[in-house]
Length: 517
Image 1: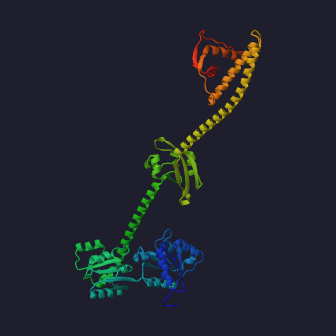
Image 2: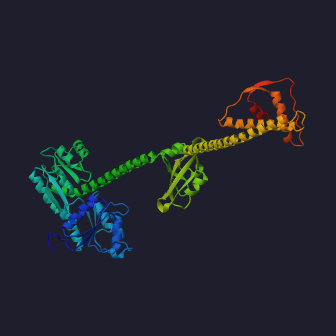
Image 3: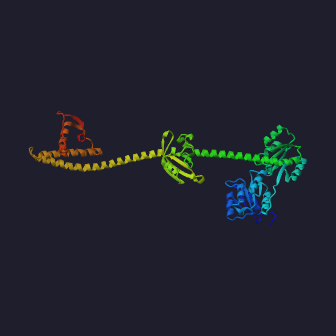
């Protein structure tokens, strides 16, 4: 095995939900000769083991969705997976660090814990020792910023006795290089000033514990430095051995504070995410209801609350109080996806016609989300359109009938002209006292009335004009009586009563007789 590639021949499974951290860890291990298989979460690591993967080491991040590093460690060490218990497991974290987190990781079943970012050689050393069956010894480190050589020498010696590695920080270098250490010891005598140095060191929440050595150890000075970011303020005269004894405790306090800050940050992120979700939820123009298994309303968006009269009248209420049976039945059925039409009762008792689409989600698909679109205006517009179309159809039908009647009237009028001519000739050939002359004259009179009717049809169709002229109403009634008598039932009697004096009006004779009939 090459000394520069100590992981040659070893397969390492790496799990991390952060793509950047996943690539960085894989690159470090591959450079050391390892065969690396990357996974985006703990679940895929377990699946790889079930499928037959036989890694030398598993390197997993602590915080991952669904299955985190501690849960993965407990699962791998459980009796449910007896074949995995011998696989060494290294838990890493860029969020938490310290002996407490390390202790929890080991109790969960991990073989070692490593806070990252860490120097590549430390990562390789941990993985290599696990691969060959050794348990890595945690290496604590401190960076010392001091211009006093005596102070530096005493601290280096005291830390080495405690098994920690100490290095001298360079103020002219980038301060972030010390973030991979466990502690930073900052002497107040700094070339750029203590405040500038502290500001540079305290910009990152995941920074190591910061200990400031100050000549002025009064409560006011200590409070001011702690407010600026120091985790501890000790007199500059503190013995190096005592300081080395205090560093683990200060580191634990820093770890707990980091956990608290991380939880607050994540809680704030969750609040912001919830606010963004609520803003997006309320921005949906359609009404949205979330229903539980019993059909009660769990949540609603702004459009739904506006339609139903407010959240206090909506959330927690049974959906059946607002939705018709045609909507409620499919929403509470076992079908996971579908749509329906129905009505709902809105604020003020107003009934709205809606189109609903729904989908199941959540645990065992017990929760339903329903999107209700108000189609009342659309349905009313469609009904108005259908009514207009029906009226237009009737108008076209009547127009067609008018055209057809006009054609018939033309032909019928031609026949009547022939009848009128023949009856007139026949009447002229008969003497005044001939018994048949009266019937010929009546036939001619009926033909004239028929011609008047055809004239009215032509006038209605726009092909003839009305003939308004003086008309004797009494005479028109008498003439109409003689025409109606043959058509009367034998059980009926037609009696015409009118004034003896003439009654003249301006009218179309044909239309007048039509009204009388």
